[in-house]
Amino acid sequence: MNYVFRIGILVGLLFAATAASAQRIGTALPPFSGAVTRITTRRPNTVPASFRGPVALLKEELRPDFDIYTKDSVGFDHGRTSPVVVVGYNNLRSDVHPWAVEAGYKYVDTSDGHSDLYLLSAWLTAWSRSSSDGSGSDSLTLEADGAEVNSQRRLDTYGIFEVSRTAAKLDVFAGVSTVRGSGDRNSAFTFAVSPTLPLSPKYSINGLYAFENKIDGEDYAEISVARTFEKPEIQIAFVAAKHGTYAIRFQKTLKHVFRRPM
Image (cartoon, rainbow, N blue to C red; front, side, top):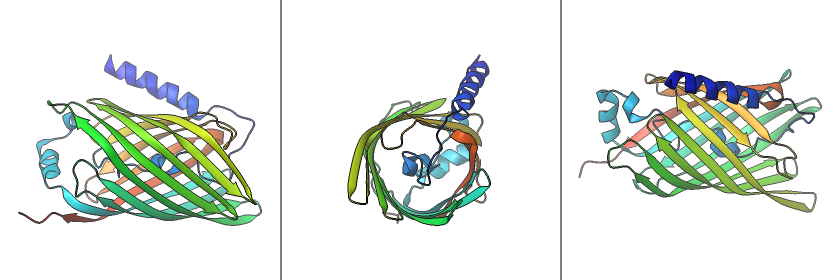
C-alpha cells in the first residue's frame, strides 16, 4: 500500500510539473529560488533516520561547527543553457538556531544575448522541535533571497514551516516578494508547498508548487529526483519544471569544520 501511495503522489506531481500554460517564465529565477534550489543545506540528511544504518547515525553525532558548500545547477530552456554557481556558509554552532548565507551568479542565456544575474540569500531556523522517539520534527525557518539582473532587483522574504515524519516531509512557504526596476516598485504575497518523499536510503523525490501571484504573473511547478552519494559527499537532482524546462542541480560540501572536544 505504501508503494501505491508513493506512485500516486509521483504521478500527481508529474502532472503538475508538466501542466501547459500560455505564458513563459522570464529570465529571473522561479519563486522561492533560494529555498527551492537548496537540496541538503538546511537539512544535511534528507533521508529519515529509519532509512539510515548505524554508521550514518553515528556520523551525525560528530556535528560540524560549520560547513562550506557549493550549490550549482545547469538549466535548459528550449535550446538555451543557463548555469548557476553558488557558494554558502552554514553555521551549525547552535543546535537550535543554525543559519546560513549564500552568494551566487547565474548566466542567463536569452535569444538577445545573455544577462548576468547576481544572488544573495540568508536564512535562520527560528524554532524547531523533535519527537521524543525521533520519528519526526517540526521547524520554522526565516529566509530572504535577493536577486539583481540588469536594472531589476527582486527580494523574497518568507517563512518556511516544515513538518517531517518518518516517511515524508512537507515544506510550506509564505511571504512577500518585491520587485524594483526603472523607479517602479511592486509587491505581492507569495505561497507555495513542497513535499519530499524518500524512495530509498539514497533516492528521494521532491515537488514544488507556487501559487500564482501578481509579481510572477502565473503559478510555478517543478518535480525533481535526487541521488545522494556518500563518497564523494554530493547530491545530484534532476529537475523537470513548468513550460518544458529542465535542470541538473548539484550540491557538495567542500569543507566540514568540526567542533573541538571540550
